[in-house]
Image (cartoon, rainbow, N blue to C red):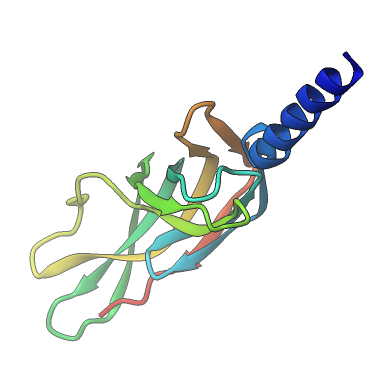
Length: 162
């Protein structure tokens, strides 16, 4: 009887060792955001995943973009400005976990909305700066893993006029 219990426990231990990455809690690490032109690039590392499994990611947030009227002939700015705010456009990505159950990747947010029309004739609206307020990063594999950006997280940058 002791031999049967030993063999059963050995089998259970072997299966548990093989499946350990599947039972491990996945964790987001090193999540950060940086400006990439007018877009926000959210980079991350997620550990504790099933090796070889595909994982879909998406980030969410809002943005506030500032526009300035520029003279068409001289391409010089005027003092007239406007801001546009709204939900950021999303760029879902799919990554495959490596043999250690790790995914390193990035997703983007970008300004998404109608271009404001506020300049008089012979002047054009030009975006000059943008601020993002990212809210979360989601791994859509079951069970869903979510990284919540700290409240008040704001990442800003200039947009170079052409």
